[in-house]
Figure 1 (cartoon, rainbow, N blue to C red):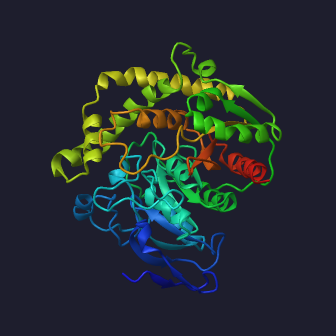
Figure 2: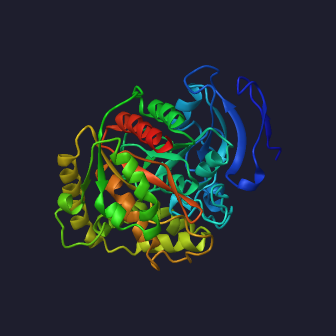
Length: 416
């Protein structure tokens, strides 16, 4: 396919060439619905979990693509962007059926992480993150259920936002775990992310805001030593610019006997797996699709879940959510490294997510926003072992506009 495209009203109608080597796109196209609007100067990619009219939403799995018809309408989030003047350049790669966190796809390959080519980009919104990081598009739409925007944003050294659950329409988006599914975006800077997410959330963007930083004790303590060391100067700069104090999850969830953050994962994961199997299990069992080995094992774990665990997990989820809501005020922002370690080297994780501690440690961090329905932004912060590690900021549920404005203030401090 010829990757050269010419767009009217796009950056003086210059020729735009997508690097084939990035493997970020599964299908390339040019779709423009409006020539004016708040996003008129921007191009974007769409995760292959999100409908584009006339194209099959393949969910990054060949058997799913072969067994499903083309979409009859754009997903609402795509329509919003097109009607705002942005031009869509294509469908981006992902982990199969969005059930993964590495960004490695057994059928379509692994999109190349521009910030650390020897490391995985993170998933499941891998192609969207890579397309933005590589400069192929100005922003990209992704989904985030268990970290699928926040993790690749951190790994690729860009901005990524998971909005408050339910804040952005998921109509036209293939579900994974509906109780946690969100649609968000990637961008290379906070200003572009704010423009896009304000549109999707239908909120007015805020300018400068004041707020308080809560430094999450477990978020820093549970990180690898090299990550903690790299964040030392960051914390000093932030503490000198914003009112800040430490806070512990144990003081919120009341489970002082549980170490670190893993009790949040233990609440999140069974609910997520139960929803995934209820959503996709019928198709997996009836179609018996070809799956990559890691994806197949993930579905086996979801199928094999002891559902007797669910009542207790659901009760704890509501207790955690209510406890955090009581202490997180409208000007409070929780802060911690997005990940405990830089992105793993390609091929280093093995195939079974039950082996090793990488996946549990990642999910423990991602579970906070999922359980409590919070908006979360990961923005570029430090470099560890030659790879980026992002800083995460979380705000109260529904406080997305405040979080976006506050994050730009944090970025200005870090860039100063």
